[in-house]
Structures are given as structure tokens and as C-alpha cells.
Image (cartoon, rainbow, N blue to C red):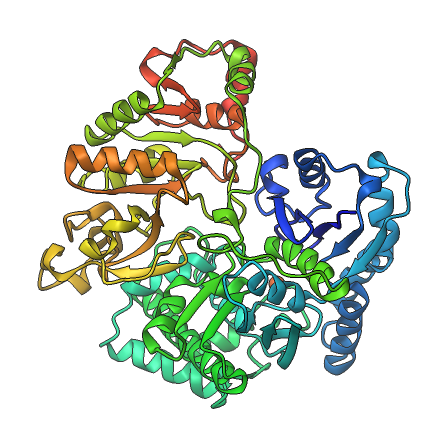
Length: 619
Ligand SMILES: [Fe+2]
């Protein structure tokens, strides 16, 4: 009989569901993609429906359902934290308690009630510890038989960082760092202070950090103050936060703004306000401090496990600048990072933990790269479904019988400077679009960055876009010799492809610096000549690989701008209807879905009822 495990993560942020059958991952998706609410923390009923439908599993056939953390342990942390900091924190305690009593403490009942529509059988419900879920999501789909495992995030139940050892017999937790001392929360505190949203704006801090001037006195003072006042880093990478400066244990905010302002001499930046050099220098300072901690943790993990393989998960593992420093430091030979490193991936990890650790299931041999199927684990739509979905919009389209002809046409239009929505195959699991729900453009164009920012994404982003590159061409462009199929590593552009910077470059305004033409591929070159890379191979994504090949044939450049297919505060598109709405809403020139091409110039005015549908709530 098959062993079928449904993993669920919910009630924090990025709820998700995943299903594994006999140890093999079959489907996974985040709830936000279906509900269209970014980072939706609700019970992932629609993701569950999708993974069950996709695999043809009936509810009563499930061997077990497993939740990605242990609510009782979390509740214990809440009580003990209140006790330790009392009477501070009374307000946040009072706010949190009713939700806990109403929902989270009775999670089994809540899960059963929520799943009633699928069946009445009594499927076993299990709970995995939060960091064990992260650890399992990092180790079991990795290509390694044994590996050191490092999980770093904000907080789970108590743990904020763990070092584990994964081997054929299972996962051994070796060291844990406990709340409130947390690398993730330290980074989030800076995210908050720099005026970005916690739990989603962290990548903006990372993107801002290369604008910091590492030679400046201001930067050096900021870094010294962080190390002297905010965080004590021990040799093994464990940390102690000075809780006089942080509010997250007792209040509903992250930082004690008054004390931070006194310490740094910089007030908290209000969201959407101008970004000045002091903000960029603060971003660089916390990025470098985080890298110091991560590298010390990696060194410790290597030392105490003896393994030269490292796998990682937890939100901090999405910090691709830090990840690349790990590779450079040379403590480990091989590094694998779970693409859904945040809490969405906890659903998958919980399912793996239940199967391999709870039920003693054997490990399957990994695929060519790993067992994640390049993260293409979400819904896929056949040509007829695409046409059915967009019929009410009276869309004009052209059908290409031969996909190669479509690819040739698209590459020509890209080379002419057009921006193209590319919707193919199964949706990606995790935060990145990897060529199945992507917006593509020519990285050589000097105008494309601005056009993408303003006309497609409706924002003035300060980060350049990421390139997708043919894996076989990687070394011709970048100083990276390892594939990066999940866009989790950064690499430097080769010196010969760079253009020199003007002398007063570091005194220039942020956007002047962003739009300065720095290289042969300006749309994807950051101010420090780095790029966040996705390598594409024939095995990983034959259609996307074919398009890159075709673009290279035409232009000599086997690389495209790849930004996630979403507009204006929406999650990445999931269905053909989402994609068509995004296409009509923005100034995208073409949309390709399956074998269909939609040309913006050919589209008719929308029927009134549907015209309203392309207006987004945040407009
Ligand atoms: Fe987490």
C-alpha cells in the first residue's frame, strides 16, 4: 500500500500544502497563489484541494496529515516570554491570547473541521517541530546521502537557529539557539527600521546593501555600534541580542525606535519616503553582520558534523548574498538550499519528516540535480483550459502548432525591446518565478529596467532585475562555476564585461546610480556588479532553455531578464486568467501561454464586466 502524506503550514505567513507519496514529492503550492492575497496566512484549503486533485488522492487514502509546527510549544513560549518580561508585553499578550484559545491550541480539531469537505474518515494528524520541518525540507530533497543542516529563521516554537546532521538513519538535532536570540528577527528589526515590511521586505534590505559605502566612516560606525550594542556574536555563531533595543518579545513592533535613533543618530525611515545614504549604509552594516554570523554557523556546522556537504532552509537561507559568501569561504564543498526556504517550505518538510522520521520510510534516489523537480510543483493548464479561461475577455490570440516557431517569434520580439509574459507548465513552489510564471526582457537593453519598473511592476524598485542564463554559458559571463537553478546565489559579472564607474559615483542619488549603464547587460547588473542568477538547463526547463538558446542565436547573449509574473502588489500569477488580467493591466507587449500568443496591439476593449476585473485593489 502507498504511503501518502499531506503537509500543511499555516497561521503565520505564506501558508502552503504539499503532498508526498512513498517519499516522492508530487505537488506543492502556496495559498496566496489561489486566494490572490500576498503571503496569505490563512488555512490553506485551496492549496490542499489542489494537491489532492493533482495527485488523485482521496482524503480517506491519506496515511497522515502533518502540521509544520507544534502549537502547544509555541504557546508555552508565549507564556514564558510574557512571564520573563512581565509586566512589559501585557498588551501584546492580551491581543494574542484569544486567537490562541479560539484557534491554535485546538489545531487538531481545526484541521479536521476545515477538511470535512474532503471526507469523514479519521486520518491521523501529526505535528512536526518548526525547525525539524525546515531541516527535513533541506535534507531529504537534497542530492546528499549525508549533510550538515543549518536552519535559520525568525522563530519557530523556541528555536531560531539549529544545526543538525542528516544521514540515512534520520536527522539528529545537535545545537539550537532559542528565542528571543534570533538572526532572522535581528534582520527583520532592520527591515522594519529601514521602512520596509517585516517578513517580506528583507530582500529589499539585502538589495539596498550594495549601495552602502563600505569605505565610509558612517558605515564603519554603524557596524561597530551593531556589534557593540545590539548583538553579541560568539565564536560558534550563536548570538545574544540586547533586548533593551528590541520590542518583538513584548510588543507588537520590532524595535525600540527611541533607543535606535539615539544609537545610530538616524530616525526610523517612514515607508515609501526617500532613501538616503545613511539607510544604504545601515543596510550594508546589517548585511555584513548577518554574513559574519552565518559564516560562523557554517564553520561550526562543518566542525561538529564533519560533513563537507551543507543544506539550508529557514527564511535567512533566502539571503542569496550570504549564501554566495558561504561558497566563497570554502568551509563546505557542496551547498544545497531548499528553494521554498521560508515557512511555505515547512509544509513540505513536515511531510518529509513524518514519512522518513515518523514512519521510517526509505529515501528515494535524487533526480539529476535533486528531488525538488526544479520547484515546478504547482498547477499546470492544458491549452483548452487556457482558452476556456480567457474566453469571457474576448481575447485575440494566435495559436502556434509548432512551439519552435513560437520560440523564434518571441526571441525576435524580445531582442526588439518588447516585454513578454511567459506562462508555461507547472507553477513554481517558493518565492521565485523560475521561467514558468515569468516576465521576460532583453538584459542588454539600456531602457528595459526603467520600463519594467514603471510600466509593468508599477513601482520604482531600486534593485536591478535577475537574469536567467543558459547553464552552459554561465562561466562566460559570471565568476560562478556552480549551477543555481533556484536563484539563490549571487555572482559577479566578469571584469571584461563591466563598464567603469564615474568618479563621483558614490555621491550620486540612488536612482542615478541604479540607471547608470554599468555593463553589457545593465538591466541585470547591480551597483556592485553582482547578479542574482538562475541557471537554466535543458533538464530543468526544456521550453525556457529553448527560448534562451534561440535568443542567443539571434543576439549572442544566452541570458534574459526574468522577473516574477505579478503586477501591483499581487502574488505571482497562478491561472491563465490571472496572467491575462496582469497582461491587460500592465504595459506588457506580449503574453505567451502554452502555444498561444497574445499581442497587446491586437486586443479589443474589454467587456465592461471584465474591464473591472483588471483593476487591482491597490490602484
Ligand atoms: Fe520558519
